[in-house]
Image (cartoon, rainbow, N blue to C red; front, top):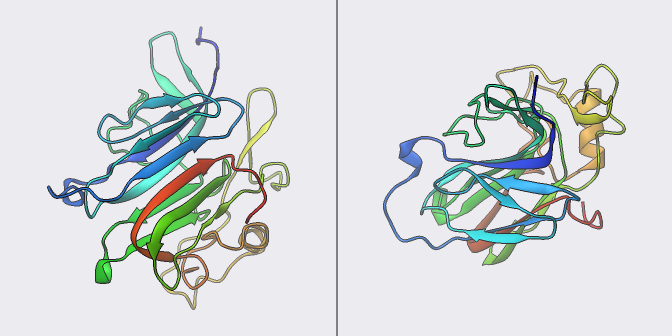
Length: 235
């Protein structure tokens, strides 16, 4: 018999490959805040797992030139053998720690490449792999022509079409799948009616493949505040 459902959200800080972890001076910080009405489990460097209680904040320091993703897992539980799994954002490791594994769609993704081309940080919040919870990324300090907040603070689960909706055992809508296919070029990968609905609700989020012009942001010498379940005052 499976263990009781854990009423928590698990946030994963995915480490990627060793190439993303050069030894160097760490200058960027990520301040992660949980404004959800439940405990949040965050996957930081290097252990990929800690809990944030409701209203709690923790600051972590990624290595210089780090690139990777951060997301949340929801509706998680352990079975009788101790195997850990989640309805949304599961990484398939069977444990709280993902050990570098990626998220199973649908999941809202915060994506970063620090100290990239021209010394700039590149970041976005992506709904290309679907949506499971609101996320806001806000630069703190820094400079650049496109150095501004991005994310999706709207709850899209309630309005998700029935054929794309992921539901819990209780029948609650907990995530919304992406309807986009895989295409090779911007010309062949046009936004679908579903991705356009995501885009209209969250115009700064990356909603379909090649949605770069309005959804990729850059900063130099910035720190970043990452908020889960932010107050929906800024899209």
